[in-house]
Amino acid sequence: MPQITVVIMELAAAVAVGNLLQKLKLPGGMLIGAILGVAVLNLGFEIGYAPSWFKMTAQILTGAYLGCSLTREEVKEIPKVIGPALIMIVGFFLLCIGCSLAFEKFAGLDPLTALFCALPGGMTDTPLVAMDMGAQAGIVVAAQLVRAIYGISVLPLVLLAADKVLAPRLGVPSVREQDRLQEKRKKPDKALLMMALTLLTAAAGGFFGKWLGIPAGTFACALIFAMLFNVKTDRGYSPRPLRRVAQVLSGICIGIRITRGELATMAKMIPALIILVIGYSLFCVLLGSLFAKRFRMGLREGMLSVSPAGAAEVTLVAADMGVISSKLLVMHVVRLITALVLFPQLFRIYLALRGL
Image (cartoon, rainbow, N blue to C red; front, side):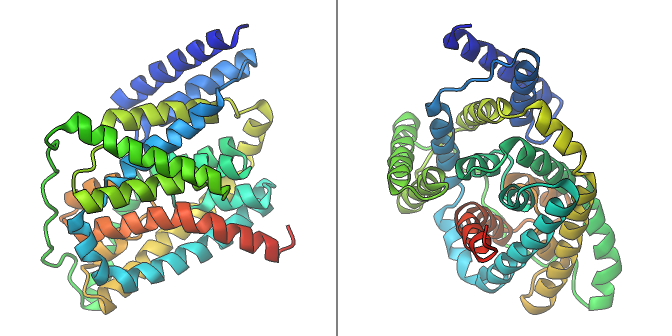
């Protein structure tokens, strides 16, 4: 079958299933649908193929989108969260190591894939970085899907229950008077021009990162370049449809890697996934309590600031829980950048120390 025909079939399957799950309001619906659509196509016909530029384009678009999430207003909040952020980074890294050992033991995964299964990154971004470093992206998707859905649907209920019990015992408020997030920024003047400049900046960063040859360099540098552009000009612009394009391209790149052998491996992951969600829950409660006592956060704000769900989703969930805080967004931007840029480098050191 001609490659162009295969690509068209994959795009059609990815968009169709992605749109369906998006309409059903499933978290990460476009990405999950794209992966499922292409995976089914690949499993049925064994025709998996994606041009090499699909992955790079997806990384650049994702970097541009996320880079625009940090504005000058959020930068002003950074000094207030340095202490909690450092504790969070160390805690998440140790949690990754601990949970990865569970994935190795119970699911028989290789150490690198196990580490990425436990990484608190994004649904779109983590599998891309994992794939870039040679991990089994399809298996990483399964673990990240559980993390994302649990973080958005079940974990908030767990945190509300913990808040009801712990807030009076710790003598801390559930919600402090918060600095309100600014309203969502409107589309800037000359939106097309600013979008083009943002994408060109991210692309320059992506090519620079690829030239450096470091793991996840394309995505990391695209994100950093776009973030610096946005902070400098306060006019970086990457509309949501570009995020959808990145999700579709990412879904194709990941979906073609899901084989029958990997499906059998996923079934062995259930005990490790249970350990993962319990670990994340305890992590949120313990660190949230510490932040509330030591850093003058509300208990809900402290717990939500280390939630493993996505930054955008957590912000929406937090608003429903009465927490509207720019510090919360900064913490999640720090978590995401650290998880996707720093942790992969630390994983290499950790594996080298293990002689792997």
